[in-house]
Picture (cartoon, rainbow over the protein chains, first blue to last red):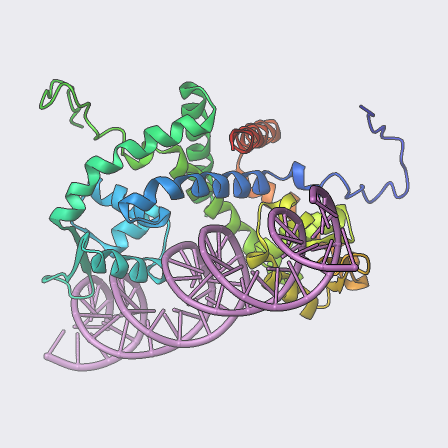
Length: 160
Length: 160
DNA sequence: GCCTATTTAATTGTGCACAATTGAATTGGA
DNA sequence: TCCAATTCAATTGTGCACAATTAAATAGGC
């Protein structure tokens, strides 16, 4: 392993950009790639349930709390209605949810679970377990990583 | 604040699925959300460069090593040609890269940087710096997180 | 040399993800 | 009460992301 010595003085006023822009120095890419890999790992587990990964996240949010407006779902999942509306329509078509205009404020649409949507929960419970096996990480490291990511997200949102 | 006591013994043989499926217990969601937030934070920084975030990642890979085949790019970025081909076509249209059939193996397409593509590198060097400011994390914690994510990705890929 | 299997990028079809915009409903101040 | 501002979901347009498939090129075994 060759250590790069910092005697290179091409332009002392302008630091070398080589290391800054290296893919493997980018947290953003590590996030992007890991997220993609995890999402992909979920796919075969969710297919028997008839759910895509984003749909699974929506169902998780609804199992936790339903009925819920599109806005509330968007806030829970950091997604906007451009993404959610078509996704929810597909979940409705699949028979897992219903979409109803709120009687008290007609701008709002309430998303409720159907019986089939509720019943899906039991099957879904096996998914995180099966996925954890594929992560090749001890459970406490998984929890640490999750907490760190949640901290990061919280801080970024607070900085806005 | 009401604490849910764990004296609920509906079905002792089947553990409660409530906690397992909670959104804030899912590493996958923490990853998904953080990745989304970071990608979004890049957007205003990349717009002046005329790049979307995935295009930026492709350019990072090319600044590191070019020319490069679509396959090599795909391997570096965990993306397939369905994603890359249209993306690269847009980068070509923007004048940042060229796409040429490899003379020795015509199945391959070599992606090279144009002068404009090379020149973009200097401007791009400011992006990670500007973004790091928004992360609200010390640099060593950023590096830790990045390393952990890279470990995770490596392990998941090795398990396939 | 011939033929099958494999490789590579492109294409097709589907489902996101998001900025900008739109239309309808509601809020709040004058 | 009226009207402008705001809110909410839906829509429009664009760019991904990926599974499956296709077409052309190459590799390798016989």
